[in-house]
Length: 235
Image (cartoon, rainbow, N blue to C red):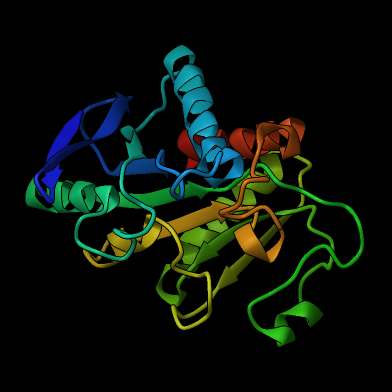
């Protein structure tokens, strides 16, 4: 548990550690807060469900390297992109402890998939010529500097599941590239990626009352977890 205070109120990150205590660290996280009073099934109960299943898998099959699973508070507004985010608190603590962090992965909305044509949109129209127009894939998202890490993660995903995987390295000026906790680690020089169903570029229920459990695709969510689990074993 990592406790901290924001505006005089207590908050906490929930941390679970697996594998050996020495060696380069892999951090996998998801935020557990939701936007205001919305149900938050995809954003981001889906990511937390994935984190819990990873914890079960790693408890049965410990990874060969140190892994921290972190459930973050305060990812949503009004704290988004501020120093108060739970992920900022965690990243800063790792730097202060001089931990060698090889990679951080944020699971940000991993449960909404659609197979109908035209169900996937993009922040830049030109991307529609490079990626599928059906929202039936999971995306691995990173900045330009994390290109090699992204390629490795994508390869491990592809080897572990038949779920289509798309990837993008892009500057933060592209809308959505930094829309989760992974960006907090960039501020501290830590390589970080996001695993996502692309949020509002696919899911019409984003930050709304319709973001309910019945809209999620649990079979494909499980495949996302299988891909992330493969990363913990072989990255």
